[in-house]
Image (tube, rainbow, N blue to C red; front, side, top):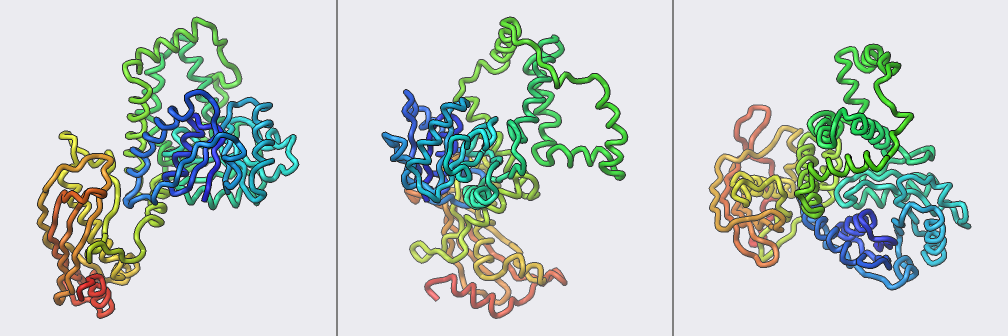
Length: 462
């Protein structure tokens, strides 16, 4: 699959990075000065951050090609993403050029945060080909993308976007600024008034969000959060209790303070005092590390963005046995930021996590999967000896190679080697003993023959 990227700034570059890291070849056209250098910084951030969301290795990155012309960038692409400045005349010119040179079956998507599809399609002979696909920065991490336009084109786009780990939100009826940015605009206007009126500075406002409702919104959104506020009586009770407050003069959402030089200077100086000791690159890294940690924390609960990450993991994991030097490849992943301790390397508990994941792979391949557990059978780990050989650091790609011994009655013995991918440095080893258990009695039991045979098949020497 090929993605054509027209405009490789913060948003277009984020699109290019996500497509490439999810295995697409990417052709980029951006004639502006310094575009390639700016993209390389975005791509480096993405390479550090995106793999840390998942428990399995991403596909091999696609090839990234910088093109000398728009025609070259879009000629063979199944998806073309336009991310030029928010100037309608410029977008018309670029989109017309894209449609002249792209494939007839290509999706032509605009990253516009404000224009409706009908605004973009006015001079097009094939308007149904052009849709809005509005993402959120950083595109390579945040999964939401608002799609607006022809329903059949958006349906086709949905499948491709889900394939690169995104969550398409179809906006059924076009409206200026779509959905999410209209919320952001309301909050932004109120924040400007709070600064203008001397009630709060920029850091106070940011603290109100990041220590309060921002944490709730990250997992539940707005309405589900308020449903909880209604208690056992639910949303109807919440609206009855707090609905009258909408008539009170709390906010100024229909107005905005004049952005006088004094107000602009106040906001800028407060922001400098708040964050000026970090470079933009440092803030980007802090943002990415925090996002990875928050989104990963939601994964075990399979809630919000965590449910999406779990679904992507299912597409990445091995469905069939893969061997290397007669050892079963049971783990292949990148070490995420939340596995690192105060010494700057992977915490010892996470080695146990890797070897636990390795054992789970063996069991999945042997047929002792979720359905088997639901039927009343499983394996419990009763002993595990780990030896730590080398430090393991954030962002390193590692894999586990496992020797699977044939079943010994109720017992399953595994020997694992955790190695750094690429140079094969041995990082840790483990010897693990599992026993088969009848979950109805919670006592050890002999596994059925098909499990015994499947486990034997995971040892090439048998």
